[in-house]
Image (cartoon, rainbow over all chains, first blue to last red; front, side):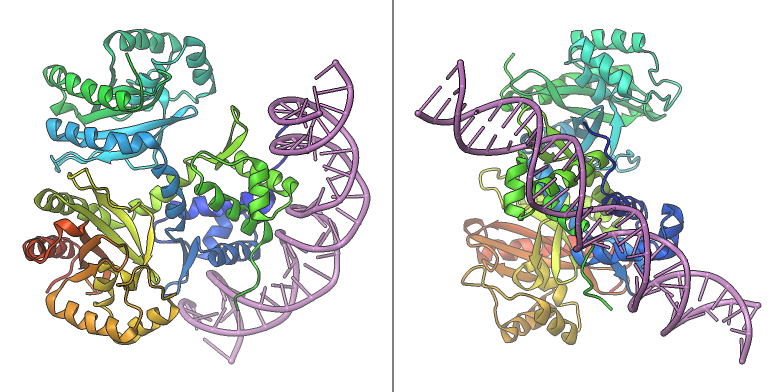
Length: 256
Length: 256
DNA sequence: AACTTAGTTTCGTATTGCGAAACAGAAACG
DNA sequence: CGTTTCTGTTTCGCAATACGAAACTAAGTT
């Protein structure tokens, strides 16, 4: 039914866009041509089209092509329409104020979570690495696991199979058995850990946000460097995390 | 040199994307076909390609096509690379806390400003209409005018000529003379007003953020409903606004 | 002045995307 | 329960469209 190849010019244009998105200060035509493997005149034509449509602009001072913020405008509309975002902002900020640590809101899309909101720590010193729009697999983050824990086992297995299991750090879970062990615990306690499974030196606690169907479509987390996240601190933070998750879930129509 | 028509399939695909971005809960194929004026089989082919590339997904439950967050991922990278954003976040939040009103950060792109960060009022009652990624003309916003005020007159004229002058409210400036009068005042005081020029019932004060070249590439503002923004309140808020703008400008390398 | 190298424009060609039409499935109707 | 009328998917022959080689321009380099 599917797997007919994508329209060629679209595929090519988007590969250029992806390349450009990785280079903040733009790229010259020839570089785009060589790394994409396309003929320079093809690249030129596609860029000209994208420029005319307003997605790309050529920096006249140095001849480099770069993305404009028009994509941001489009995707901003999409993100804005996610109702959990509106409901979560206030509780998240309160949570950050109570904990003084970075807090995140993610939603699930397929086998990944996407960061859609962040309130930064006031301990400005150490900055968490996270970017809005960034994706991570479900199985290696506190938020992801807390969402998995709201799903039936067979779906978890499906997601696991579709995921590219990769040990981001030495603590990353790479066996399905381990994952299920953890999920059992998460279901009991209502929150999930990430003990440096995604990034060394960072520990997170996460809790799912449920909508009226009871399924976890989103999750929130508190992240901090190892030094500020010992067991005592966790005991202190968990109730606050859960309260915030509860609050948002209730606002989304989840009961009990 | 330009105005050769854009690659057809690109132009069409992006028009579909724009349509989809305006409908949070997706659109059925036929609706897309009729409003875009494209043949349904063309729409189908383009959507299939966009799906395969991961930008669009078909909601199997109701058959509607919707945008994924992949665009958000791309544009997130672009936005993230704007250094003024990182530098502005803390001062903006402080400003919001001091004023208890909604504060915004915008950057200029061409003849428009783009909202790239917002810290919402805690007076949750009345919510400002503003969305990240949203664009407004320079001439009808406090932030826009404060940026114009940092530019040489001839450039202001150029921008004016390229702009589609439109009276958003009865207070919108629609004559170049009026604009220059205001710019003169803004240059004297260092901040700009928006007296319901963009939206009835909303008053803003804005100040430009300058980089090391002295040009205003960004600006910040405090917005509030008319009722909370009388002259006394403005006198109180302006110094705080200016302090924040100053702070960010300094961090960007602007001196004096 | 000769030689690179990046970027733009032209243009003939075949490939690619096009859309009419057939098909499949679901919902609405009588 | 068959008929009609939707929407969405697939096929396929045709020609318009996008392709890329090559010519050309403009800057830099040697």
